Structures are given as C-alpha cells and as structure tokens.
Image 1: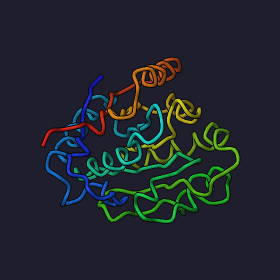
Image 2: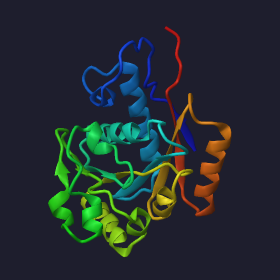
Image 3: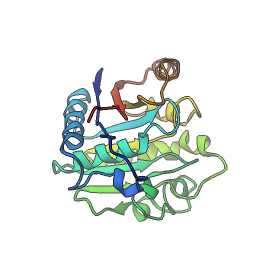
Length: 228
C-alpha cells in the first residue's frame, strides 16, 4: 500500500475557495501537480496489468476532499493520453457536477432506472481524453440501484470503453454504497484528511473494505499543514 500527499492547502488561504479553484489548472502550484503525478505513477503500478482499470475513490467520513481528489487524479491520468471517465456514484449528495459547474442530470441514476441510455448521458469535458458520467437525479433507493445487475452492466461497458474509470462514492463509514462497489472494481483509493479523519474512523473504513476483500491500492493523505 502506498501513501501520497497532494499538499492541497499550501497556507495563505485568506479568502474562501470557489469549487473551480480546487481543480488542477495552469495556476495550480507546482508541488500540488507533482504530487498528483506521483499518485498517478503509484496507482498505475498498483493496478492489475490489464488494458482497462476501474478504481473506487472513497473516504472514511464526509468533507475529506474525496471528490476533488477523484477528479484531479482523473485529470492527471488523462494528461498522459489515455481515455478516462469519472463516474459520480454518490447518488445521495453528488459533488462532481458541482465541481465542474455543470448540471448533473440526467446521469447514472437515470440509466440505472432505465429512463436514459448510457451513451446519451456520458458528457465530454474541456479536458482532452476525459469524460464524465454525472450522478443524475437523486433516487429514493440509491443502494439498491448501485447493487443492481444494471450497475454491473454499466461498469462492464465503461471498462471496455475507457482505459481508466474513476468512481466517486459516498464515505465508507456513512452509508454502504462504497462497500457495494468496492468488491466489483480493480481497487480502492482511500482519501484521508489530516485535519478531520481520526485513527478510529480510518480503522473502521479499512476494516469494512478488507471484510469484503476489496483491494486497497493506497491512502491519499490530504489537507496537510505546511510551514511558510
């Protein structure tokens, strides 16, 4: 298991960040970009040596930087020329569309409920080689939809279409959704926030993932305090 640190907060935060400020861009500090590149290298070597790879990105609890980390990791992979898709499987409190300042519906939930076809709701992004499958309308039964045979079909199609699929899920310790998906993908990236995550919360999350024999690829340590 590897551990990496994107150094997302590098001091001097005097005004509130906008959602778009959290996403990798030309103005992102060099240290942050290099940390995500290191994460990319570690993930690439940790995943099975296959043509198509799927990764669940989750955390122990809320507000740990999971969705931002999922999106930035996908951007970093897409920069190498491989085909990448980000799937927002948080059907309760989705965040990927908001980070991208886009409308999140129709999306995954609409496909799982068979209201829309998968090919009709996959969105192209402004980033080369990177597509999005947003969460869609918030359903009354998210866990049941994610556990369905239709979800297996979606995962299979995406794995055939893309080189890498990064799946944003709710926190492990809050609802069962991440656990339902973790055993059906190639690996799990666990995001940990130094300022929020407790040792007990992290231990509980790891135990739940290990119980279903999910492959934990590593820990992304987020929100590190650094000196000026």
